[in-house]
Structures are given as C-alpha cells and as structure tokens.
Image 1: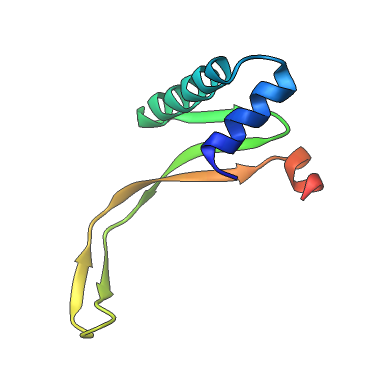
Image 2 (image 1 turned 120 degrees about the vertical axis):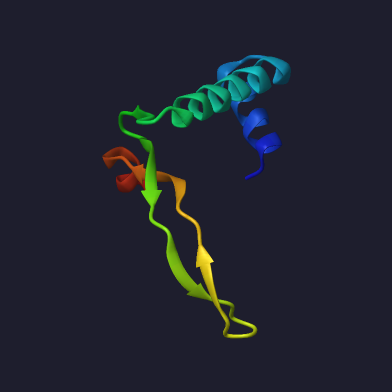
Length: 90
C-alpha cells in the first residue's frame, strides 16, 4: 500500500475529502518524527504498536565486494514494536 492508497482509504472510511485525509496523515507523520527526534522519543498507540529510538554502537564491518574492513559509525535507529491487537490480526 502506498501513501496515496492510504490517503484514499482514510478519506473513504472517515467520510472526508482526500485533501483532509492527506493533511491528517502528514500531521501524524510530522508529529511522530518530531517526537522521535527527542533524546528519549517514544510514540505508543495502544493496540497498534510503539515507535521508539534505539542507539546502535559503532562497529567494524567488511566491504562485501572487496573484503576490506570498514568502520560503521554509531547511529540512532527507529524501531517499531507491534502491539497485541496488531499481532493478533496478523
């Protein structure tokens, strides 16, 4: 499902225009992003799941083409853990 498909489905289910549905979806994505930028950002949607940030340490890796060792920088990564309701549906 693409973003456009999701907007169309939201508009149909909620009985609103595609423009309004697109604005609502964009607002949701913006607010989740802003929250996750914070040091201990976390967004919990009960029954659906939790978006959180995890810190990945720096590590050594290998270039798969040449086999040469490379350094991989530490990074903050986004994690999603499905909630009980979503797990049961899938």
